[in-house]
Length: 378
Ligand code: ACO
Image (cartoon, rainbow, N blue to C red):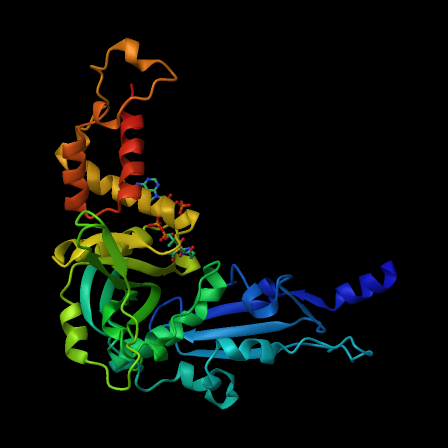
């Protein structure tokens, strides 16, 4: 049995290693950026293993300006089916995750020689521009109602199952009635070299995020008025929805929820996530309809970044920076098992005022206050 297992093992490939992602950064000096996915289980199953090939290579290439994907599958020997045991259908597994054009081998060269690349502009408006290590980056944002944004999001979302655990793609085509509430943010590196080849694009995507609005309804008594209900706007169950009511709903107080957030691996840990998060946060702060900023299913890496960003933002506010543990509590009250009301520890009115002003979600705000207070203990 072990000899057979060893033989079968030789025909198995680790899907995360077999799949290589390449960004074709036309205009840039280093024109290729290659890396492997963090996850492939949504495509190739729990084991992240592909059976039946020697030297299997799946090359998933993206044009860095518009993220058009193209895939090329190569291998040496293929396992010749023995009874029930057949080689995995690699293309079949990939098909639900990629547009049909990605498999068209005639289109492979179109990715490198795209005549329209030079005139490409990121959709929407510019939100933030910054330089890091002498390189220029721009964050653009737009509504998902914009067709160019939709197209770009459709392409970039191919990366979601590969890098965000449990992440799912937004059903871009199912969003007709609620599309206005989605915003998309793209981070681009911009090639500023004067000698760039004229037919190439100066833009190369390095990360993106999405957010959507969740409306807040203040309920009348007996539940309210302090009780608030949050709801998303679902498609009306009618053939002729009243678009004017949708329009007026857009002006109601709402929470903004960050949904997908991704910085591509070669650019991680260089501060880009921080720039993107802060730029989005500034935008939400400037919108008077937004009363709170939330995040959908954050993971640990995102929470780390979020804590640093939120704490830095709060500490820039003198009232927050001077929040202190109330040391006037009589020592007798400080017994280990005594429950001390929280308003005796910090000034609760000031705390609430700061929270509302910074639009940070209550639970996150409490964590930040705690982190800050702990750091003030000498
Ligand atoms: N001092 C010390 N450390 C800091 C500071 C600071 N002032 N500010 C940030 N950090 C640390 C963070 O702890 C983190 O550490 P590490 O990268 O060294 O491990 C790092 O700096 C994060 O900061 P950035 O470089 O700005 O973040 P990055 O550009 O790497 O983006 C992100 C972070 C989005 C998590 C990225 O790594 C990523 O895309 N990962 C894969 C996909 C993913 O997990 N996305 C989030 C899913 S959850 C969601 O979508 C809502």
